[in-house]
Image (cartoon, rainbow, N blue to C red; front, side):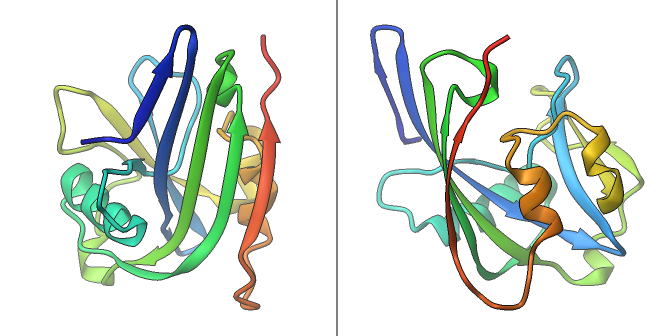
Length: 160
């Protein structure tokens, strides 16, 4: 059961996502009608470790068997996706997959075709030109280092 709490016009959710990079490109996705890109992942479930959540989400959405490399960031995202009173608690992992498994075209539709999620490999140096949520990811992705330090970020999205 996905972890989402709703109270009147406020919502809290736990989202777990993975950073998958190959050949200086990062895998992002959006809905067909959406205008913002996010990292692949989904809602955490009760009694599920977040590392297992990211593995499950990649398998369900992409048919990819990923391995968790390490925890990168915890992002408390207020007004997530520009929606007032949406508080997303995000857990972000660096993940890897076998090269033979990541032979997908530049842009493609995920396995959950009824949802219509579009995936795209985007050049790391192009991140500053796209609409990505949470916005703090633009810089965080550029600064992934080998120091293994986990960062805790408070991100408040501006409302349109």
